[in-house]
Length: 105
Image (cartoon, rainbow, N blue to C red):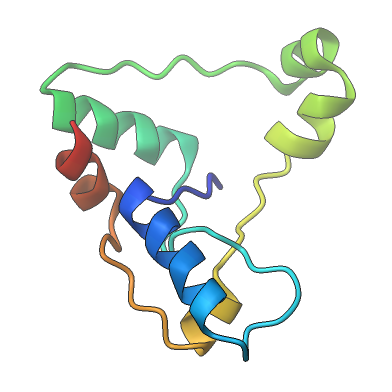
């Protein structure tokens, strides 16, 4: 999975955390809707009105080229959610990738 957040929500979340003293410790600034790389590519292509053709890259090729970074950051697909933001009452301006990309592109 690929965690993303819109600029509007990043700024909004930062202000929310600064104003809300009940929020403590690390806070994940991510959208509540993580997507796969294929979904991101498809949504970006749709927003830009461009065709997309995802080209799968074998895991061994990523590992050979990027080493430990690929094994720890790219291949596992971390599905990170904004639990503290949501629990503290933050309301996202953009909950879907389509909506967020349309707002900036």
